[in-house]
Image (cartoon, rainbow, N blue to C red; front, top):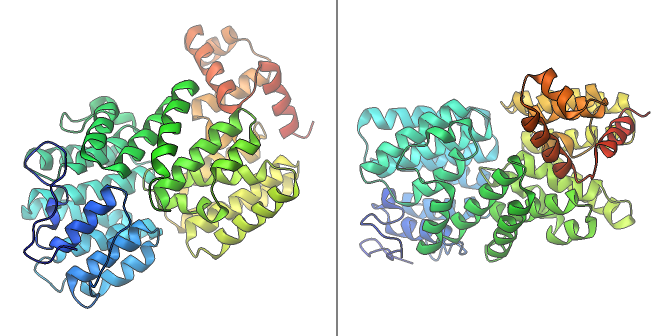
Length: 443
């Protein structure tokens, strides 16, 4: 491990600014950050938690290991105690957000604005704006994500750490603001190549995951499979944490869509990883739900055992989002078996938990599924709001032309939505969609 005064290793990426530039006062913490970027196990060595730098090294280790609560507990006593405490505060706030503290999301934005007003150095401002973007992306606040991306772009132009725009690219790609992407935030293809050439294995996996997700949203499952296989390959080289689990969960989701339950279960390495996915800032609850389906869709004894193990893990995780997903999974499980009253009861409880977690929007789609009865387990995860609307109309017997007229879109657009729906649900025809509708309603 580097000692104070030693130079951190130079990356292979082009440019004069080194990764972790915002950690320049603390060389050992900077090395830990670079190890995280490269997907290596964070070596804490003889770093002591009694001083600020040692505590930050240990915090980065625990964040990478998927234990943000431990990281936050290490950093909390140090907030405001050092003239460099803004760095500590940024990591502390980020750790609390990763643990599911609803107040931390708003604090990431407050800290970023404060650092901008104080004229803090570009790397630190960039880190703060990245955390603001990540926390608000998880909550679906695309307007704030776009604002944070613009501010991060300004920090980048002023000399922020080169990895931050690559990290931001995966967030901006998932928002309606992606068409207004600032010039210094690369598109996903460029970000992927920058991560590859720099040796940032973790960011490479995140870029591939974002590309896979985007391909699914645009109705291109073939491209999604290519990208997710790449994410799965590179993800297996990472330590067991949220990014590796996210790659496995999305791969499992694609296999489920094609009816390959054994293949889906094979790529999810162990049930303990399934709820870890929430630690990955970009993917969070959606992929945890997808991974739960691997167990929920099984009918053999192993699948039932795995389902119970995952539910116990979520129950004991101690985080409100985990508990909300556990109750939500019970609602979907009951709904798929035609137990409408139990499904509604669990859905109401899940909403309360999401609200307590500061994420009420996460419950909206579940309630639509349970109340409308037009879906099965995976539907609320797989389809966009417009696709859910189209699915109901098609299942009711409407032709593409009728759907287009009803929604005031072109027939070609309606056809695209229908093809995307069938692909995402892993079914072959409109007739199959109608059968799913009837099964969900208990007809």
